[in-house]
Amino acid sequence: DGGITQSPKYLFRKEGQNVTLSCEQNLNHDAMYWYRQDPGQGLRLIYYSQIVNDFQKGDIAEGYSVSREKKESFPLTVTSAQKNPTAFYLCASRTRGTTVEQYFGPGTRLTVT
Amino acid sequence: SQELEQSPQSLIVQEGKNLTINCTSSKTLYGLYWYKQKYGEGLIFLMMLQKGGEEKSHEKITAKLDEKKQQSSLHITASQPSHAGIYLCGADNQAGTALIFGKGTTLSVSS
Image (cartoon, rainbow over all chains, first blue to last red; front, top):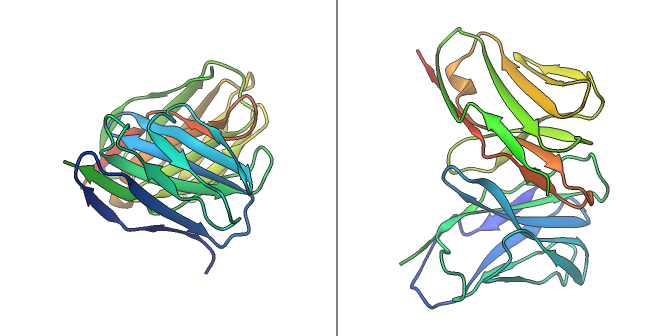
């Protein structure tokens, strides 16, 4: 089955530690995205990548970093510089171009204490 | 920058009743997407609207895009407990490189 895998489902970290969230897709999509979801806030775009070895900042990129070394993979690192990292993180992908739906992974809930 | 406003923020309806959720954009919409989300899960794509006046239906859910392409509505007929969840509208950003989303509408259906 084609789809997007995010792991783990739940992640717990201590404040001050960096943590990397995994996102893998086997849909052969060029574009991949990371969103953050907080209660009552909807989805906010963190980073996106239209092609391998290239990525752009979204609306709330501060305190996050990404890499896109392979078409299938788009890991997100939440650094210690992110002031409020506890949230639900969603990865998505789609074929390049507009008016094409995005497919979403199941999400990772990160809790930092 | 473009913003999407959804109303209402939350909704409680009795099973069997009809309901409507609205999504209003600050700019012309070139692609409007409706998604559904169960709490703590990923988003499930429902429908995409592109043309002014366009209307699409799937089972008991109908979505419309107004002629001016700045507002969309999602209508559920004869609601069921399975319709409960968070409904989000999304739109292509100005550069066409990513989707932006409204804050969502939480729907509860009481039996």
